[in-house]
Image (cartoon, rainbow, N blue to C red):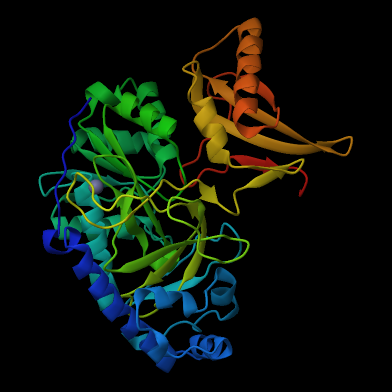
Length: 437
Ligand SMILES: [Zn+2]
């Protein structure tokens, strides 16, 4: 496999001592709390209701006195409720992808674009992007933040940017070969899709392209998905995390040790809470990620509830030299979780089990239905190559058994022929819930 290649973009901040980081965090936290309190009706109102004033923030722990902010809060105050500068200072607008409703707009001043470039440059450097690289950016350049985020980071580094956006997969492969792209940015399942199209064109991604590293985010993916991507492309594949409400991609990024994602703590304070009670959970314990943006100019967010489930890792240092805390890979969004006869299930758990099996291709679909007042879970998955009916049945039985071990529920598994399930150029939609149709 391609050797990892990594460097530190901003050593003085990325490897600063914990003391320095925490001092900077406190200073910035106090500043941003003052700023939102003085300039924003909603924050002021909620803080008054909780009986907390900006002066009450004396230590980092005092952040727990502040109210949470939710997506519903942002939505109710649309379009400008959480904007704390004049609209004429706004140089760019993006929106959440609207998977759970209408998009929520987010605003950027020049300062915001600068800072976004900084955190994305750090993130891309962790994956080894240098000015000698050619980066093919496959997320869209639109209200969605993906494309622009990678763009601003790569501009900082001075890499050659090929902004293909999503789709037109054959053309992507053509462009990639002609321009000798060395790195791919996008959504993990699209890397799999591109490899598939390459083979259809007679191009072996590992041998006939120069792509040896990739950075993927926007939708949760698993370790076994990583192995599939790394094998088919002969690349190092890295995870990254972000969300539009907090700039977009670039909130946290995986380094070459692939054991958690560093959160850029001079720009964010990360907390993990119990989604039911809102209380902070113990270190290493799973819960909902909550972020406070410390440097956002147009639209800072205080204790923003992401609905993403992960945990803070108990690791104060990393072999890469960075001192910023790490979060685990995202297990899923609370919105993605579904419940079968009272059992909570994440699509990532299903992906992880299915892709452990080499006879299976990384394409699957989860269908939920009701039968005789019971929920029924059907998982359709493609085989990697065409199988006889008998072999399909044997494989399906084995997968159903393996899945049961992990998700407790026994699903009906249907192994289908290669190329029969939907492909996604953007975020994958694995679940079809017929109970709500
Ligand atoms: Zn590291």
